Image (cartoon, rainbow, N blue to C red; front, side):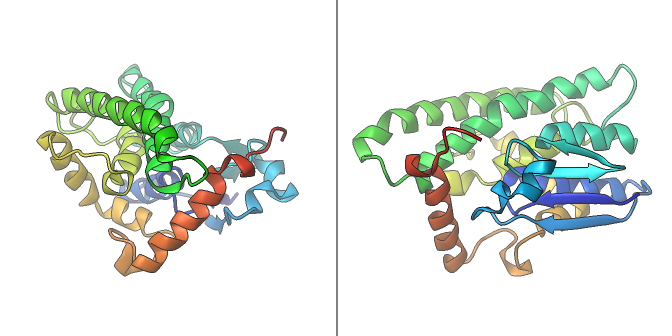
Length: 243
């Protein structure tokens, strides 16, 4: 059976394309992978996508007739379905799974909110944005301190092996400049960002949805387009109060 991936060029979307490429890099035999780009201009609300992902957000996958939503759940599913060092299946999995959900519950929401208030939200005054910018800015630095503590002990978040926890967290931390979250005060984090980026599977995974020459730095035109699209998604006027 094929593996259908519904995604877009975002941190959560790149988690899945990086995972697929890292599985291939590990020598795992994968089924045929079909990548489907979901336009975040409204396609995520289409009946076809909602049938796969009731939460109306990317990414989502369909494998062997089973639809799975939520990026970290997808990483766990792929790690368990296609065994590799990316997710140990013995008792060592508990060295990894808590950090996978640490990213889902902490890094993603905090970095995402900092990014939204920094780049996207236009229907709030600077005075209204001041408190959330300070709050999410400070919390992002606390989380970087937690990450730094892990990297003081070993090369990757959960040990000397690269895992799904690194994939999930790195896909958000790599965008630190765009979110204006300074990581330069954490040399170990900086080294980890570069170390993960140097992996061939990661390079191929983050190339999804962007031209080769914009993998690490978007063009001015693309940045403007992302700001416009992000502003539309982040606006209170665009929020639905019912699914």
